[in-house]
Structure formats: C-alpha cells, structure tokens
Image (spheres, rainbow, N blue to C red):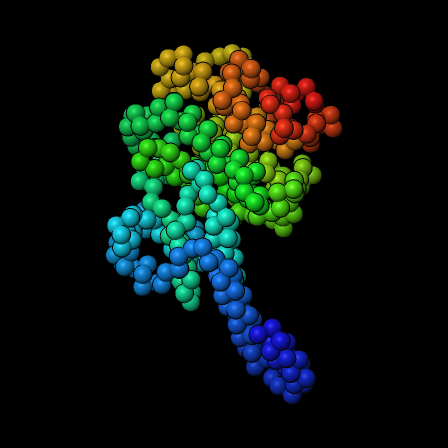
Length: 377
C-alpha cells in the first residue's frame, strides 16, 4: 500500500506540468484519505483483545438510541443492553478531528488497563464514519451531578456523606496511581474532572473518558506536548505557561486536586458567570480560612469527624494544586496522605500563579509522607 501510494505520487509529480491543478488536488485528497483509512484499519487490527461490533449491533443494543444518558462535545452516551442482558453505556463519537485520533487514543489507552477504579471497555465499533465505544454501565452516572446538584441539595447530601466523599477521593487516587505507575506504560489522563468520574450502584468511582490521554514509557518523567489539553478550571498551569515546569503525571495531580476541592465545596472552583472570579475562587478563600483557623462553613458538616474529613481533603487538595509541579505530591503520596493521620498534615503555601521559587525542591514520590518532602526542600 505504501509503495503503491509513493508510486502514484511520483507519477503525479511528473504529470504536474500537463494536468490542471484542481484535478491534482482532488487526486491528492483521495490518496490522503485512503492512507488514513488504511492507517485506521491497521490500528484496529492491533486491538485483538476487544470485541468489535457493527453499527447495526450498536443500534440494536440501544433500541435505536432510545435512552440518552449524557451529551458532550465528543458526542452522546446511550444506555444499551447486550444479548446476555448485561447493561452497557455506548459512547457514540461525533465531530472527530482529522483521522479520528481521539477514538484510537481512547481505545488504545483504556484497553491497556485493568483496575477496579478505571471503567472497563467491552468493545467498539469502527465502521466507515461511525465510531462507538461500548463501556460497562455505571448506574449512578457521573460524580458531577451529585456535587453540583443545586436543584435537590438535600437528596445529594443524603446520598454522598462526608465518609462517602472521602472514599471516592481515595478510590480515584488509587485509580490514578495505577495509571501512573501500575501499567506497563504510564498513562496520563489529562482530563480528570467530576464529569469523567462515574459511580456504580455502590458509589464506587471509576475513571472514564480517555480521549485526551497520552501513553508514554514509565521511565519518562517529562512528556512533550504540542498544545494544552483538558478542561478549563482543571488544566494544570504548566500546560499553558511552559516556564512553570514540565508536563508530567503531576499535571493529573493538579486536576485531581481541583476536583477534590469541588467535592468539598460542592461548587465549581471558578464560577464563569461571575465577573470577579477572585471573590469566588474557593481555593484562595478556604486557604485563608485555614490560616486564620476560622470555621469553614461547609454544607452538611454535623460532627467533628465530618469536619476533620473535610479539612483533610481540603489540605490535600491544596497541596495538589501547587503552581510548581515539583511542589505537588505524586498520587502515591496522595494515597498515603489520605490514609494517614490528619495531625501530620501541614497547610501548604497559598497557590498563587507566579514563577516557581528556585529553592523549591522536587517532590519525591518515594517519600512516605509530605513532611519528608518538605524537609528535602
């Protein structure tokens, strides 16, 4: 295929003086499209471990897309059922860029995973322009609808107690630790946010949506990026301002920290509808309260245990969103901090966007606590 394509290109170059330019452009476009289709088919052949479905299968599973679960810029998610009765969620992709790299990216990355806190991909559809992913069904949907549920706050609080929120944050940390260290290749998610955390019937969270993920060798600490990727409000600053530090697994840590702070405050960290964002930026507000030892005034706290849990999550979240990536803990440390003693935690510096201090040392993932990291700096 490659040789024949090269031969056609050479022929076109030789005939270029005799043919009209519009015809040349049309033929070149056809060659480019055939090359992309061939490349896509070769990528699909490598996914032998996953079940491949036809578009007709997808329509049958969803009863012609009868029940929509959610919708986003990537397309829509529908509820479906396999022949054996198992419920599934089908992600129908639309408006894919270029050669559908997001589709192959998601399939390739998630097919390498197997963890209780990472959603399972059961199969896919790759038929012409039709692209679909078949996932296990998560009956409680996304975390987003619980922590940002303004219409029925009481019901959300009853379902997600502070202990449940803590367990969810710990489980997500385990999932990210696995992606960063437990796979054969390191997987950077680059889009950790409440919408991409799905909950099963027992509120066990699973990380989903790997469309922006990047697979890299485990020994690589810094990865090269052509542009920023992620969602506003969760994107690590080094993805936008390159002199802050290198892009690495610490970028996921930042997104995780922002999400944890939203879980605690039950509101978005940045309210885009408000002009004075500095007045509504929860991380700065809560950091000031912690420094002054003032009441946090968080909703749903009824006892000292809830207060300690909420404060612990806040302190860890603030460590995770430090501007300099080196000052953030890695996910192994986050797990240790969540499981460790509340009294051992120290309030981190206020996360202000500025040039990193030259005296700030790297945060070593091998250390057993944040205190060791502080000592090394």
